[in-house]
Length: 211
Image (cartoon, rainbow, N blue to C red; front, side, top):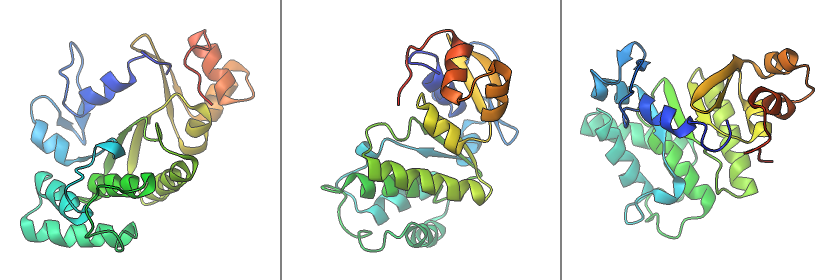
């Protein structure tokens, strides 16, 4: 959706940071309002890569969040070692995060999100502020996670990104879902050749389109 459509509000509600005025949100059947801790443990939240704790090393940062997600100390250490290997972070795992490149920050943030092996991963405009190479790396990582069976929910107004990554799209405008379907289904529905053109047709304006 365009800016102000309600994308971030929706994701914050799913993660339990906001209480819905009506309706409900559940993760794997767990209500986010009545059982917020269990719901959060079933999610991986990809944070702003520029907001990682700079005084910690990636190993310390990832392990800390693994314990917050419900793992025991020994299990958190084992899971941290595993995800450091999976994301090829060994060379920087024991350096303080201060001074890291965009790509290093992004990988560290993603490791924190998946260290407890959640089925579901939530990202709010994940490529915002990233350079071209970091964006390419993140997109490839998301494709790999999708291939491993993870459910990945992310917000964006970059239609090329949505078209290349998403199996299913929810188009939002003015706080409402105005269309749901695969990229091809939305193109067919609007008789448009590209998802960007379909998006404009669905929301009735080109405001908020990014390339």
